[in-house]
Length: 262
Image (cartoon, rainbow, N blue to C red):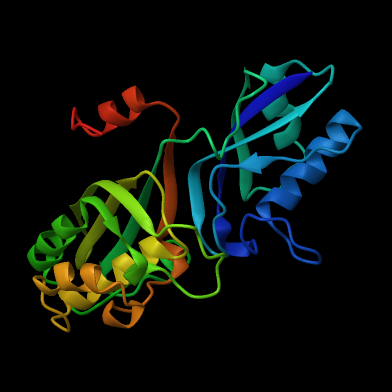
């Protein structure tokens, strides 16, 4: 029996999210179909994060168990020859039998891309287009209120499975700016030990509302403390969201944070 950990990337545009669903094209469903064909047995994979429809991944992780003859290092090549062009297995490695891609993760990094410039049709599936100038400094100021262990119920959408606790720890929340033709690309990066349903998209929507002057940066603290979804801003569209990295040990996480204590 082997336990195989996959690193996966995908363009979420034409998928109905990660999780397998009857009658829908999903990332999990496509990969399981291909692996089951390769190994001539039913394969079920478990991912670290269940991304929604339209959300992308640069570094999704998923594991599965089974007995099969294909060498582990050849799994990506064999599977990618059968997979469609919008999903790809980047690597495969054998891990301990008790390893679980979801429960053993200690942190996740998401990035969200905003095109603060004129509309670019070619980028419509890969960013949030906002033509009106955003106040980047106010957004940056507000983002610092997110850091720490707090109840993030204000940023949880209805419709998902209600967790036992809505307390999460955000280790960092930062912005970078990149100049582009007739504007700039704003990249928001957030690292935490876990995220609620639509949490990152609601956080970004709130930050955008702050950047547009609809909400004050100093209101972010009160929004968090209210634990009231109606106090937060809109939900940003899925196209700009990317699952960027998964951490399975605190040393990796700390290194990514530049030495910041967990």
